[in-house]
Length: 357
Image (cartoon, rainbow, N blue to C red; front, side, top):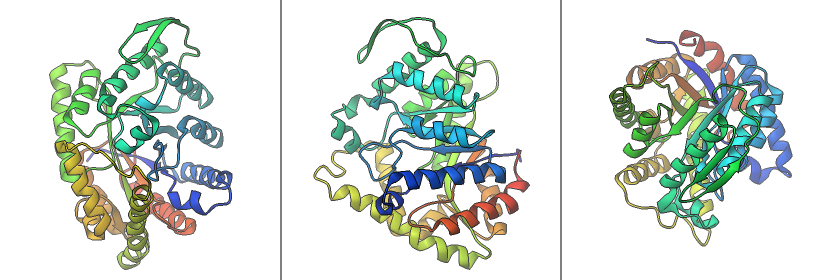
């Protein structure tokens, strides 16, 4: 079994922002956790962007990651993902390049088209054109990183001799990841030779999608090594299986309640999610996650237990999926910081050494 790279996921649970007097206190607490993760041997620190949503509270990933870069020295950092349709692409290219310099070349650039239609509706963006927007935006971003000037005429953006600055610290640019759930996104990543990340589907579905991606990539006959794969899962480790379940079960299910209720009570709600096969499957998964803790465990959506149990779960999952980076989300729902910190330490000290690079 190949060795793994381990990272920490920080999605900023809505509870903390809702209960803290000021957001600054939450940011400062999480920056301290990033430092601790690096000290414990985690090799990466990743977050995710959402807009107009209770799902995530990082609305400006580059700003926050700049702070993370100043509080750490070696960890890879990034957002998995930036929702590209929400950005002016040349400006984002420059932001990421600056972040790459401020971190001395530690940035991983995660991209995605977005999943939740209500986020697009609230900003007046065309949800049905998000794929075309994202692919055009990424094309512009790569040109901004690799060309001295950019003249571009597209469907959504136009540039006339733009002068992007600076160029990235990493050459030719930071590694590019695609948050891929649909066959179209997997095909796009394979064609462009980009890495692939996953954080929603159940294990058996991810296994199928990763295999589909690898076969599609081989057909493209790219030179060099195969792109890497990345999976995020909630993880809670305690001294015993019983204690781990007791600590994790209530907060995990209540976290889904708050996310769902917070959006549903708005005027727009979850309006308009299109019934594609991918979205129907995600809907089934979300329903299971909302109602059953065992659904999480039975489908590999969370790793919960003693160090020995979690190591067995991780080994089996890695054997099935063959991912290169495992990203552990230790802080989910209203879990107390002391509890998630204990889990992070147990995972780093008693699970990671068996599989770490």
